[in-house]
Every structure is written in C-alpha cells, then in structure tokens.
Length: 200
Image: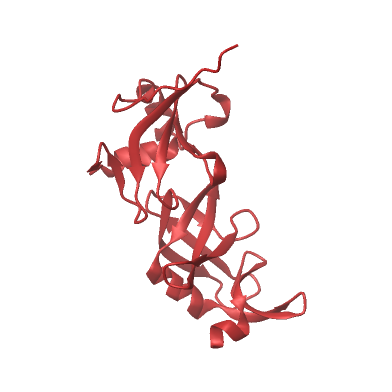
C-alpha cells in the first residue's frame, strides 16, 4: 500500500473544539478516551516565553490559551498535538509548552518541604517524584534551565526569576559519592549541578 502523507491543517479551526468546552469547564477533558485521526499541522506556535501564536498573531484571550492547553498531548521527541474527539493536529513548540510563573514553598526547611509551581495556564504542581524537576544546560548562556513535568510528556520551563528562587532554596547533598547542589521537594532531591561548579 502506498504511504499516505498527512496534509497541512493550515489555518482551519479545530472542528471539534466545541465538543471540548463543557469537559474543560469541569476540570479537564478526558483526553485518554479520545483516539481521533491525525489531520496534519495547524499554524499554532508556542514561543519560548510562553506566548501562543495563531497564524503569526499572539492569542490575546487567556481563556482560549487555557482551553488549547487543556487539550494538548505529546512531548519530548514525539511532537506536540491538540486533540479533540474528532481530530488531532500538530503544533509548533519552541521550547516547552508551558512556563512556570509562580513558586510557593510549603514547610520550608522541614523534612516535608514542598515546592509548588504554577504555570502560565493555571496548572499547579507539587514538585516531587510525580512532577520532577530536571535541569539541562543552556547552550546560549552556559548556565542551566530548569523544567518541571506537568502532565503526560508536557513540561513547563521555569522562568528566570523563579530559577533564582530555586538556587536560593538549594542545598548540598551527597549523591552517589558526589557533592551535588540541588533542591529538595516532596521527599525527593533534584540535583542542579556539582557543588564545586556552583561555587566556582
């Protein structure tokens, strides 16, 4: 059988978006129950600073951004998609789909210390084994960029101001015989870098 090449969805709106709204109002659509066909790519892009664009124009309605975010799936090497009961379309993500914009520390300094991060689309996650922090090298600055897993394969980039807050909260701990600098949250330790590298 000849391989079928997916067509560009282009600027066409999501036909099934109206079917999503009632579910989204009740706390999130049941994405795991949907298995629609792939309909190509749509001209939606999420910039590195968390701003969503459609046809090159910023989406100015926060409610629309939150709705799109609620029906996003994918992540890592598999790409990112918006999904409704009747269609699945690819979108472009420059860095991470979400941006962590607020941080709260519960039980600071105690064994039960927990970092709570809130994203630009309203997701609130408690950093821990289910929502781990990861740190990757920023090739542009030679520093590092923190990410937190929000849901599925979707991560939020931690904003610069909050990154500074994480560094202030960090502590040194021995991991596999190496002194590491990192953040403790939700009963887990998330290493940023070797302690000597941070001091240098």
